[in-house]
Image (cartoon, one colour):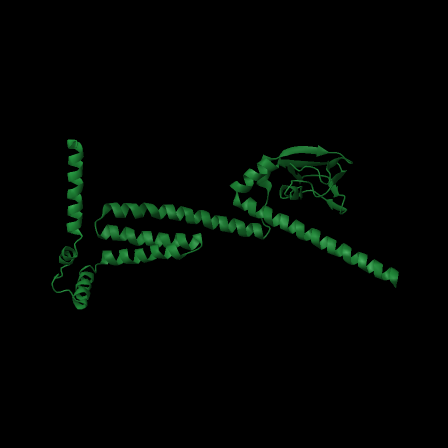
Length: 268
């Protein structure tokens, strides 16, 4: 056998022997301050109590409280309370590092404090934006720089039912008519957003220009990028489309009720 292999084998044997020796129960008991020949539950309890009392210091109390907050972060399901608990835990551990003169621990948890504070601030802003979006307070003025201007004259058709849908419209001036449901659309309204959500990206209606006007357009590819980059817009867009669908359902219910009433009057 080569000498190199023999050296490696002997080193491994020495490591295993040392590990075996250090892991012997008798040696562990001696290191804990117990007599291997007289191990009782009372002796173990008294020794653990003695160790606990000897380590009751202000620094260790801060460390224990900090550990409690870090364990709490593992039990939380939402990010805002998790970040708050993490910040409190970092604060206690930073004090522990200062009191115990452990510079590395102090600097580590002191650095984690502003990082968690920044993430918490971002999360609170996101929650606030989502709430405003849900209440309909969001303006899409910021979306205009990503859009392209286009003009239409009376009689022009913007798109037809079942046409492939590739862009969304924001009306600026003029009037437009959704022919299938006979609904006029004025300035400041979105059109064509439902085609963005349909499985085959097809138009759900026909829109015709009934008064010369100007619109801004944005492609679905660009819209998709913004949708994933800005959670506020993504949430607002879902609220917007949900409202549009509910309006369509309400309109159909009213039309159905009117038709039933007309049928009843004819029979009467």
